Image (cartoon, rainbow, N blue to C red):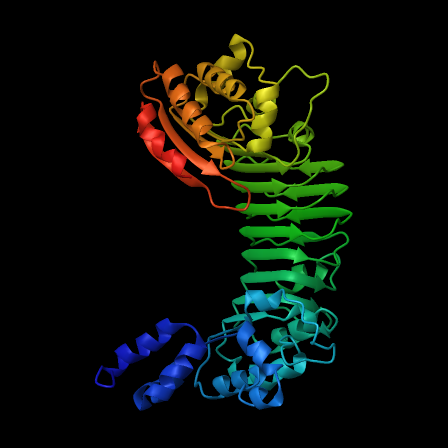
Length: 466
């Protein structure tokens, strides 16, 4: 390998990604050892095995170099550093160790003293920084690492911090930062005032499981993509982002939810309910994912929907409608009349089976624009499921593609029977493309067939293997 040109060897080292693998290569070759100084990336994540060995008897422990010492050595050996990613592996991150005392700080990676020991050496060229802390040691220690980073890293473009308790005291503006991710964070900025003030040029913002919020308000004029999952139930939630294009928002039951994003084209909204739901018209909204325990109430609160052409409806609790004459399917098509692609998850489909509706010529005309239907089935009663599918397709004459995912717990002969009978009953729709698959909670959907027109019963006999 030493005979290869240095540029090729350097490219090999760059592609390794993991700094631990780079270190092994350096030991095996003098050439690789000398070239390693040209790398511009540090990626070091502590394994579960190393952690357990470091807490074993002294004879074994002495052979394990502490994480912080390893990182300091790596950083000191590089001429230019543009990216640093440090943390603990996922199994370790969420573990609870009885033998870890509160006083331990060997994996407290958002510790200001630790970060200050190496950050000044690399801050001049640093554009990306990721710190994934060890929650057992960081959850009770309040860190000022945000302030430290804002003081040193003037060129930083991407920042990610996970599993920490963060203070915003003395935080200064970072005008070059365009991407910020805070995940499983206790944040001492209950209304997000400091986030808005000190990160004014953010284009991508990910707030996943950020606690400590009371009346959070995102007001960022350059924001284009936002993923916000709230771990608690704040009083109100506000998002004002004139250039926002894609929003994923998961919350519980805020008293007030306000969204002002006129350029929004993709929205994924998951909430139980909102006492006061206010949005300014989304004239460019095309793709919408709605998830709620009270889907009917949420639909009634939506003041828009005419521009949506791709809709997913997800009900986390099956509703028994009282005193209503329209099915959930009819309500969806009334609220979003121009939908061409519709996905119904299991809860929504189960309610639809119980209350199919589908009455009147006017409604049939309204569904002519619907081209694709995806549904997740539990098949509690094959006759009811079959009748619902046939009735739906008879009413939706414009549908050309239909995808049906059957729950994996449904016995194989029922699955085979449903598939063959659906195809038989819709034989007059020669252009209808069927796609069949299987689904189960917590697993990835799997296709049984993909894009088959007029399949025969024998085509699906292999479903018995599942």
